Amino acid sequence: MALLEVKKLTKHFGGLTAVGDVTMELHEGELVGLIGPNGAGKTTLFNLLTGVYEPSEGTVTLDSNLLNGKAPYKIASLGLSRTFQNIRLFKDMTVLENVLVGFANWHKNHLFASFFRLPTFYQSEADLKAKALELLAIFNLEKDADTLAKNLPYGQQRRLEIVRALATEPKILFLDEPAAGMNPQETAELTQLIRQIKQQFNITIMLIEHDMSLVMDVTERIYVLEYGRLIAHGTPEEIKNNKRVIEAYLGGEA
Ligand SMILES: Nc1ncnc2c1ncn2[C@@H]1O[C@H](COP(=O)(O)OP(=O)(O)OP(=O)(O)O)[C@@H](O)[C@H]1O
Image (cartoon, rainbow, N blue to C red; front, side):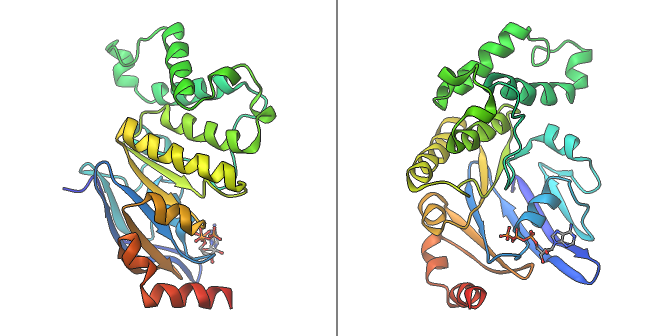
């Protein structure tokens, strides 16, 4: 059974159907791409999956839990984590503090564990700090632990955002245009980082990205949206050669 099941998901904004009748599945450990021209509905779809928007129609199910109508923090605590198109770090906090906030949000939502003093909750602050530093070390940010987030170079801020999203130990990580604004070297490092996350954490990742070489390089399957509708689904090779997809992109740029 799929980890995440999306059935006939639809979102209307007034007369506009931003996402229409989208059906898709994510399986455990997969790295899946979500592409489409500007305004195709990619971010709206992420917002529907993470509870920012309520669907007009359709269902989202994670591990047999229906997510419709649940608040974003609740959905996060069930195992969905995301990054945003525009960096949303606590810029005046240190790198380490940003990761600790990730932990804090997650623990706050595990009241059951807290109440019964399960080990997942009752770790001391020192333990959490050690765990945060461990995570930072995996992503080569440990040396910057005490640096204010705003003083990190752009590429590393994006990297930190991903680390913070991982701090909640998600089952699925949604990355919304992680390469936006990056230079080629930063994009190459990001490609490596995404591969590393998949290998080391074995989580499911869904990636929205306009950088086609990055998407084609790292993903196993790709869904393509245009005007809110799924127009294609397949391996990177299949998508690269799909006439309908090529038309959508050429049309979008014309
Ligand atoms: N809150 C909103 N209210 C009204 N319309 C919206 C809202 N959010 C998105 N839209 C519209 O829905 C459509 C899909 O937008 P969305 O941002 O999901 O596309 P996208 O594929 O992520 O685009 P991009 O690649 O440019 O980020 C667009 O026409 C957009 O203007």
